[in-house]
Image (cartoon, rainbow, N blue to C red; front, side, top):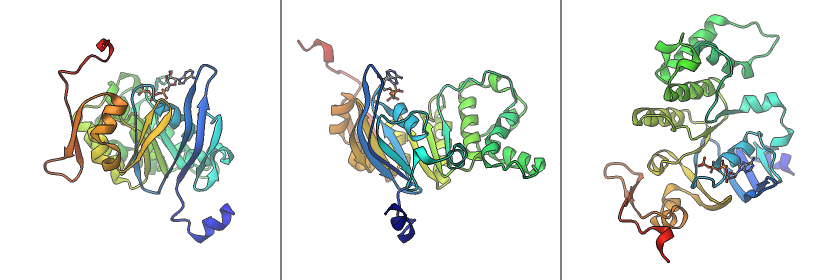
Length: 277
Ligand SMILES: Nc1ncnc2c1ncn2[C@@H]1O[C@H](COP(=O)(O)OP(=O)(O)OP(=O)(O)O)[C@@H](O)[C@H]1O
C-alpha cells in the first residue's frame, strides 16, 4: 500500500513521519506518543524547556536511539530498514559537544564529511574535494583557520565547523541539536540564514524563541516528553503557551519591520513559583 502511495505522488509524501513514538529508559518515560510529519524543504524548530526530550527525539530521528514503541519513516521507508550508508547519505547530524579524541586539522576534519558520498571504486579527485571543502569553509567564515587543529578552535568555531561538515555531506535532511549554542549573535543569524537558504529539510532544537520565530516554517513544542503544540510559529508561539509550558510572562507581537513574530519577555517582577504557599 505504501508503495502505491509513493508512485502516485512522491512529492507530497512527508520526508519524515513520526508515529506514536515513545522512548523509555528504565528510570522514566522520556518521550510519550509523539506524532508529527515534516514536508520536504521545511525548516522545523523543536522547542521545549530543559529536559523536555528534544535531544532524545532527535537521537531517535538519526537512529542513535531506537524507539521503545512507534515508528519513524524517511521518504516512506522505515528508518530501521535503511542501511548505514543509506542513512549517512540522507541524514547529516550536528550534535552538541563533539570531542574528537584525536588531532586533525580543520581541512582534514572537513574531508571526513565527504566519506558518506564516496564509492570505494571511484577514484578520488583531491583537487575537486579541496575546492569543495574550501568553498564550504568560506560559507561559515572559517577558511583562514583551515590549517588549524580542531582542538584549538573556540566553541563557536567548532560549532560552525561541525555545521560546515554536515553541509558538505549534501544531505536531504539536516538534524541540528541546538545549532546556535556557543555562537555570537552574528553567527546565530549567519548560520540559520545559511541553513535555511539550502532549501533542504531541517529539524533543529532551538532555545531562542525569537530565532525560532524568524527562521522556522513549523514548530514542535515538547513538554515532559509530550508534543503539546505543533504548527506555524504563529500557532505555537503564543503568550498562553509560553506561560503554560515555560512559566514565563511574554508579550508576543509582530516584529516591527519583518513578517515574523517577536517575543518579549517580562523579566521581573516574577512571583517566585516556590513561594506561593
Ligand atoms: N539514557 C538516559 N537515561 C536516563 N534518563 C535520560 C536518558 N536520556 C535522557 N534522559 C532524561 O530524559 C529527559 C529528556 O532529556 P533530553 O536530553 O532529551 O532533554 P532536552 O529537551 O534535550 O533538554 P535540554 O534542553 O536541557 O538539552 C531528561 O530528564 C533526561 O535526564
